[in-house]
Amino acid sequence: ALMLIFTVLVAVMSVLAVVAAVSPAVLVSLTDFLEGSLLSRQVLFIFASILLILSLTSIFIKFRNEKDNRSVTKLTNIGEIRISLNAVESIALAASKKAGLVKETRAHVEKAGEGVAITIRAIAMAETNLPSLFEDIQARVKSSVEEHTGIHVNDVKVVVENVYTGYRSRVE
Image (cartoon, rainbow, N blue to C red; front, top):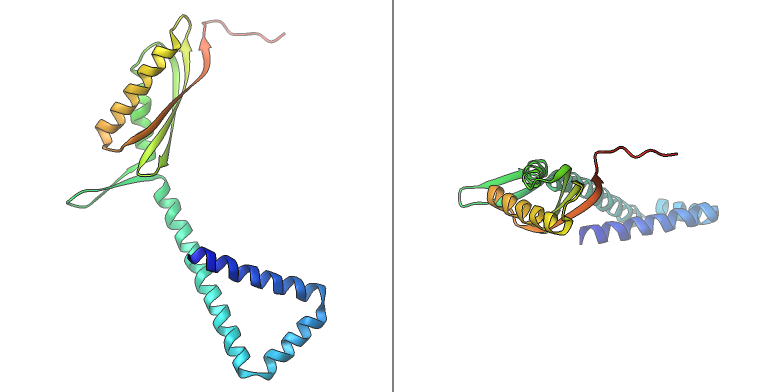
């Protein structure tokens, strides 16, 4: 609701600025109107004050949300626990490497509602049954993250970036 009010007020100010830029006579008549009436100046002061308060509030909310985006908060009967997404990534990475038959893995975690969504990027070894390997990775990652953090894992995606054959490909 705050952002809607703020957006509407900024839009009104923008329209006034465009009209004043296109037609300077409008700016002169507006200035004359404001100088002639105490009520008009009070309305302008209130309008500008509301705009300033909404601007500062939206800036505060933005910085607060950015801080909260890199962690997942869990409430317990004793208090609050924050687990950083970096910690969840480390747990997911360790679990994905335990599956074996992967040369390299990388993990990326994003907040998804009350839980997290995890993407594992992997380079598999050659001669590996990829579907069964990646089902195993998905199960291990989901289980490990939920067991160690108590955070619900909504989704585990596994992306095969390459298959390691032991040979370096040459570009000719």
